[in-house]
Amino acid sequence: MSAENTRSGNRYTLEHMVPSQWELYKSIRLEALQTNPEVFGSNYAKEVLYTQENWVSFLADSTRAIFGLWRQGEIVGLTAVALHRDDPTKAILYSTFIKEEHRARGLSRLFYEARIEWARSQGCAAVVVSHRQGNDASMAANQRYGFIYTHTEQTQWPDGTVDDELMYILEL
Image (tube, rainbow, N blue to C red):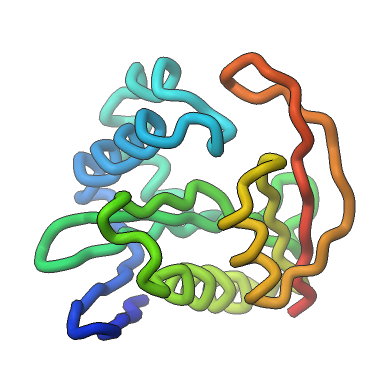
């Protein structure tokens, strides 16, 4: 699956990553965890210890799709979607990151379209997503793509703090 954005003359492509790209995935994922640790449900200290086998298995897992965002041969972002562990009729969006210098260019459209298309291809009836309280960019994007706020949960985040996690759903 591939999608593109040619806005402002800058060509970006979003591609479903494959196991042979594990080193690129590892690199962008660890960069994401270092750059914006407050928005992820994991942390750098944990994931830097993953083995090659771990990274390959994430990309080979048919219950998820991990997408890399590319510009001129360089990976500049990533996003993922997986079947919900407790309810495989739902997909969950996670792990979204775009390098700072590539933000605010409308690229989230590529992410949402690819992940929702993947969820539909898996026969999902709904897609769920969440974000930490205060992540206004995520909130705006979720609502722009039709997600409806459902509830808030108290969550202990990897940085050790307890904060609200806002939950959303999109019925397909």
